[in-house]
Length: 260
Ligand code: NAD
Image 1: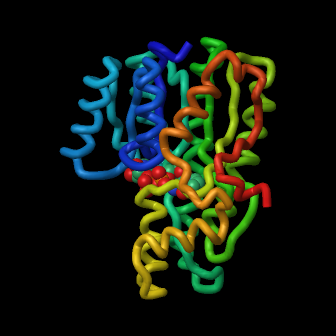
Image 2 (image 1 turned 30 degrees about the vertical axis):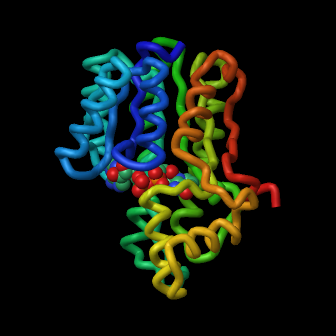
């Protein structure tokens, strides 16, 4: 079912998005990569996926804070491929500070990238999905879309919002071949989380390993990180016929975090 379909994964030059893009490509999906980074490294990633999995791999540099760039990226992709069959809204950033010290510019950026960009990608990609009466929309929310922690007000507001967005899209497409679901990862060891580990190590004067262990012990009962490939595997399942009636859900991959 996935073979030959076009998957756009936003924020796929790194971390979870890259893991999802690689896992979809391994199943034969053509992938449209997106995200920031060094141009040479991104080209290596793109060419590497095309060569390793024998799929079409493309890259678009659209900035997820800019609705006009999102619209243009999707229009270009539809010109080449007809539709985006699989849309994975993954691009995200974090900022950690208490609310009364939270820079308003960071609030705006987190909401734009972690929430509003999904509104824009979905509203732009949906009409062509509807024409084919098939589509899969997977929103990468977080355990922080289900429960809160301190000092992440913008991120947590955005991730809860993304779950609301997921439910509305699922209801509006309920009688079509298009499904929309959210995945809610716990800690996954990516550059986004490594920054928080570095801050913890520096603040506590502890080693990287000690900071990782402390981070996990605080929230994630398995005491182990989830991996980008595991998030990719659930995305692949959500794209399969077995998941046709999974609609509007928020599925944790969190080592037990939200069971507590
Ligand atoms: P990451 O920093 O490794 O990757 C983020 C990606 O988003 C990169 O490709 C980056 O270039 C891209 N990006 C950032 N700003 C962008 C913009 N304005 N326009 C386009 N692309 C942009 O982070 P990650 O940990 O892989 O996070 C991916 C997603 O998973 C995020 O939505 C994050 O909130 C979510 N998530 C991560 C964890 C975790 O533990 N790592 C847990 C739960 C949810």
